[in-house]
Image (tube, rainbow, N blue to C red; front, side, top):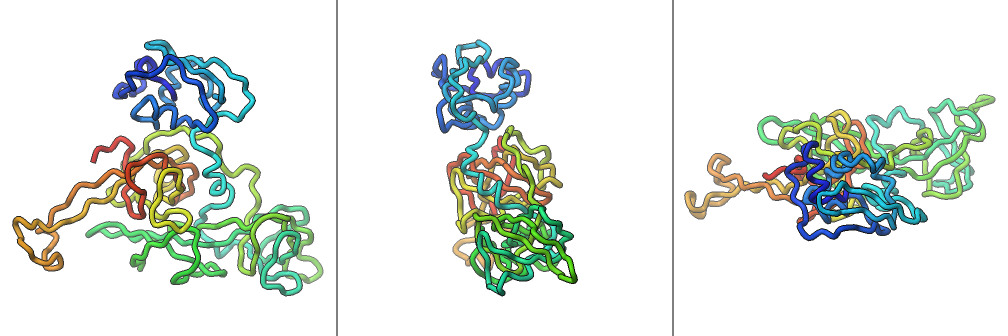
Length: 375
């Protein structure tokens, strides 16, 4: 990813000929702790999301994810990029800062349905909630002793209203303890309030509370299995769902690339911003309205754009109230670039992305476009 002019020349055969490179780059660069492949490429190139193509032009670098702090990367003019190994005492440099997205990789997922998932039906001694080391009782699972389960809580429902006359609308609903929609309440994500009659459900977001081990199945006429909660995690309550524990549910390597398909305008948008924020900045996580069914996978890079306003032409229309002027008499202003977002976890209809860089906040409702889009 750290290729400069000469690496760019080599990469031209891989459709990277349009790169502009820093003219005053040093001959070498020493990889530092905290670097990411994106950041290093961004320092020397104008399109950091295309660093994989540049690495591929230099076969001596077998795996760009195995570059370590202390490695010296040659940036000599017109030379092929080479790496002089460093001490290899620290973790390798990655495409994204894993520490920033680890909670979202481990604790959040999106599923199409929740009604068929096993759920917590009771807690030991009829308590209202349980914590690590305590016992809960689950229904709806053919659970056997020794099986590992994750306790998850439905928190958000994402939906999509397909409108042909104007634009698509997306809605984010908070959920109660049964997974039913509520009007408001504490939520890991922000809300967008729009009509959703006849809309398609994009998915239900599940937040992992904790994990546990089945100690007893449904035996002797008992209609619930017994789950012993692990010693760490959040509190568990009746209505929380369960899913099997996955050994490795996510990828740790990300190769940035442009979207594989061009989306119809208004279809791909920012759905929500993490931590109840109304807007996000660099290193914030956002939910996106497209997923695997749309050809999106881990590493897909989008640019986000504030949708241009529709303004009254005051020169032609004078000082008439905006409400009295029809759409045909208004002027559509250009969209405004905000940021670049890279997808790090993909589900069927929704994906999570990390804001990699930007000049404006990333806001709910912004349009997703090709990373090289100019308008």
